[in-house]
Length: 444
Image 1 (cartoon, rainbow, N blue to C red):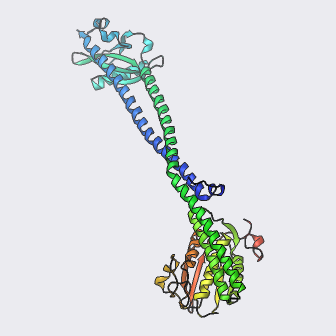
Image 2 (image 1 turned 180 degrees about the vertical axis):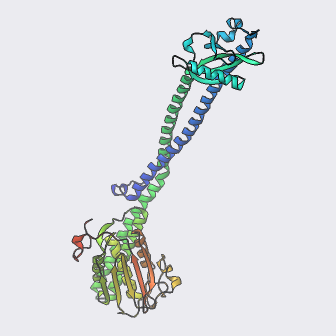
Image 3 (image 1 turned 90 degrees about the vertical axis):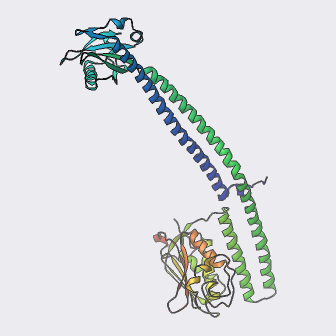
């Protein structure tokens, strides 16, 4: 197993992987919880419906059976069978409603007491429901004591009319208590299952990410070693070239190769997640001026700027400007041809006076690995006299997208080509509006 040092453990890529692991754990637990909630809700609803149906069936069958045990004889209601009927003995609440035509019902044979029955107005409603439906009705109503009961009223016929109704009631409390116990157990079980699912998801996501963490550690180690192994011989080569009095062109090529290696390594580290771009408010016009002044052939570059503030990484933006200007110098016409750099609101425009790039190839030159040899492939010009590395403009496009901007090529008025680097602007502080000193950064 590869041991990760402190810097690797703090890298943005490792931090993202750890955030991803926590997110996967959360999603796993949330998905499990959602499924369990749905299943629990279905189970609770089914149980509630089943208990209510069972309760309704109990009072309905008991009321219907007792209504068949009593009868009318010459208008007289005989209730004697209720004293011996097993259905009557097992009823929690029992009463008989009797009424003459057009009169409210009176209550007879009350078990256990009048306080167990609903209020008088509710009894009238039950009686009217029996008369309207002419069959057994089941309703919920509170007793006079406030207990919740389920009632069934079955009609008793006196000839061709309903003369009475047997009223049977059963408390809902027992069934509701059992239902509440079931709900509590379901909630407890679902909570335990969600916790178990979260723990299992966390373990599985950690196991799944171990190869990625090992790969990141290996990649970061490789990039660190590559940076050292590439920069050291380049520095030595520059010392050798200087010591032997070689041409300025050789020194420029060594410097350009060193900057290119630095840019590629920075891009690799950022794309691998080992490094994060730090975007700070900076003066784009000052950064461009300083970058151009540091170029070996800056005498052939004319710079026109206006105060502009953007949020950006100074080193990366300087690399992008340097690549655009050097491409224009190499491929923008004969040696010594002027290059014009203009900085306006959110725009760095680099113009050369070369042959240009055909419109069909202007996107292709920003791709990785497209090298020189023709004007269509090597930068912002078109002489084709020199070949590139196939990385300069690709790095420019990458830096632009990293800053939420764009990079493109357009025709210049009167001939030549313009390379544009567009960046979102930030508010310019009043204290910095006239200053042109310093490294180009401003206070946020």
